[in-house]
Amino acid sequence: MEFAFPEYNLRLMAPEIFLFLWALLIIAYDVLTKRKSETTAGYLALAGLMITGLILGFTGTGHGFGNMFVSDTAAKFFKIIFLGSAFMAIGSSFGIMREKIVNHRGEFYGLILFSTVGMMFLSSSNELLSLYIGLELTTIPLFVLAAFFKDDKLSVEAGIKYFIVGAFSSALLLYGISFLYGLSGTTDLVQMKINIAITHLTFQNIGVILILAIVLVVAGIGFKLSLPPFHQWVPDVYQGSPTPVAAFLSVGSKAAGLIAFAKIFVNGLFAFHHPDMAPNDWGRLVALLAVAAMILGNTVAIRQTNIKRMLGYSSIAQVGYIMIGIVAMNALGMAAMGFYIFAYMFANMGAFAAVAIVEDKTGSCEISTYSGLARTSPLLSATFAVFLLSLAGIPPLAGFMAKFYIFAAGIQAAQHDPGLYWMYWLVGIALLTTVFAIYYYANIIKQMYFAKEPSPHKVTYNFPALTVLLIGLAGLFVFGIYPEPVLHFASGIASSFGIIP
Image (cartoon, rainbow, N blue to C red):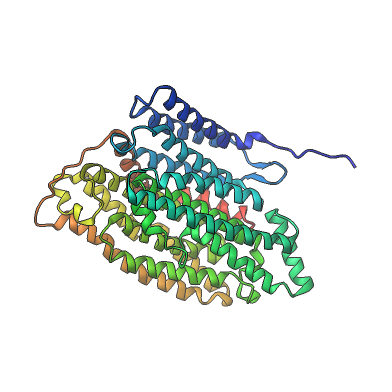
């Protein structure tokens, strides 16, 4: 029998290859120029991300490396989110380069780009081991970035905690993947879906192993997504990490976890979502975790005095809302999931950019620092208020449309399938916890606008940070009023996972 090499189709990997080489170039440039420029490495990183986006636009669809690498609608959609979140994180980091990061600017930007490459590779992975490798390439640079302020105890603590939790979650995920391979005899996600279904119909006795595999994989990815009870690392890591890194964690890393979760469960374990497959179903388990995320994230956020910790708990709640779209397992749910993380990128990256600007000026991340800020820095206060209102789901911003479509997907699933009647309860809890969220978002707006005394601080902007704020504002208003283009693009995610509209 003749051996045939797989068709590699390296052109499909052109964006990842280019961005990887560009990251190496930035690090080399910073070293060779003896780190004299404060801004050149950052501008090079921004330029590399824009060029990568252009290359992605000209990259076609298809499969490479056999069937391990796929370029389809879902992969391209999430790659846009990864590139956008990296762009906004780097744009908001120029302030910390002046004093806090003097000798390792190239490494800082290079690590963000390396992590972005891992996210992009992950979104195109069509096989369990390459998916795991992409997830590790995503998280390993983030371990270093979280502890980048090596003279700051909180930053070092954040890096160590994130490393320990990340290593443990990776071990759980890999252990779960080994069980899935044992059940299916393959690491190809599409073939795994077929083989496990056949094995279940043939033997009717794979329940214990399949349940164990589901629990391990949910736990492994649940750490990345910060779903309770795997969320404990979030507040400390967000507080201790450099603010742009915390922003990147809150959007880019979560989007990577979402696409990994969707590939394994929506694609590979499609047949075991419905309650009819109990006790082997994963839908109700994930729904319970989503409820825990919404309740815990929103209630604990109310008590926070540090704004980065508050946004950390907020991100836990936001993941709970997003999981409604995945649990719905319909075309609207997958499109809503994509639109939600897209809108969340503008709101959360913008909010963290505002926090970074205030932190650069005041050196504090306490919520009390924002007292009276509207009188001395009206532009920043207005933009920050818009970002917070979008996170709360207030119209006409994109965050409102995102929640609307997510909730509509859950109700649609309950209406069309009597076995999913409990989705009504899930959406009801989501609506109730949204009211809780309005309280702590509005509290910051109250501090800025209704304090008796004006703030002693007047913030100044560098051009990249101001650009990030304006991009965030434009995205929230444009896609809040006219969401159809993004929804149309995101609707292709369902077909990528074999869900028929």
